[in-house]
Length: 401
Image (cartoon, rainbow, N blue to C red):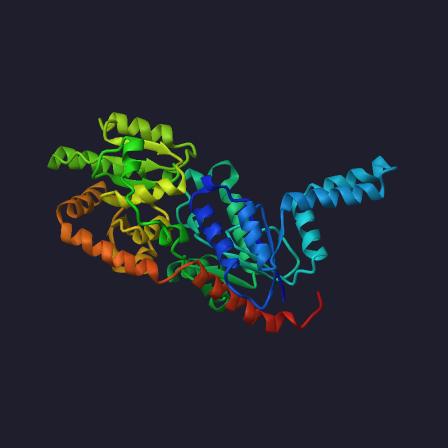
């Protein structure tokens, strides 16, 4: 079966989305499949070489659309008026992508990340969350027409999908509840532990603290500055620890500014915490390794679930995890994380204090995290998706391309 795999363009600044997509590209270069794979994505030269060696064709979406426009324009180059509708059509993403799927003879599309371009062949979706339905009050899933864009995408794509890949039973139940999808069309495949964390070098990484001027014993929170990431809740917890227990713990925030960083900075200043808070912005992956390994704990206090990648990264890098007790968290993290209520800064503070004072608990979480991280990687995840492809082949063979 000829399978199109859509990765698209996911820049490093996208955070978890980039990590996930990169892991799947790397796994594609290592895992054998009986299917013919064509990957749509803007990849690095190194990624392209690895996939080419596996006889996987790589199509850059933007190069392909230019090719389509140019070829169709040249057919009628003497008649500019006749070319105007061709150019308009060619510039529509749906049009060029559908044409490319048809031209390449693709029999099944798989969208690796939660993204969908309408196609007329069967397709598989990967869905991470339903937060626009569960928590529509957050501006990042509601403002500027975002709620309606998400709803249009999910209500159309999920209902038409041949299969939907989800990471937890909690996420599966949400999709069934909101969109009435038969449960048998949903395939449970948990998020893999990011490869960069599993394969990170073991040498001393303390120099990263000197370079960024970070004191030891810090709390670490790698997350883009969206409101749902709850940086403010963590700052309020730090204020409580200082006022009630005399604990003045530093915190390191890493992540791109998506519009909320100014507010978080102002909150830290208003609480008198500016000297404790370190804003590093976006940092390269090699620095993330050192920041995880030298942290007192990861404090991932997001409001969104049901799965998140940073706790898995922390597990693999020997960093104890404090995470939000959102639906799906217990299922994903098991007993390897200390779960807290993200709405309650007192509960967040209690979890931090407990981990700070109890070295045995901290070591237990590290040991459990390492074991949990080793159980499931990108190759395991991809093999499970290939099983879905294998099963669908018996259906797809019933009609021609």
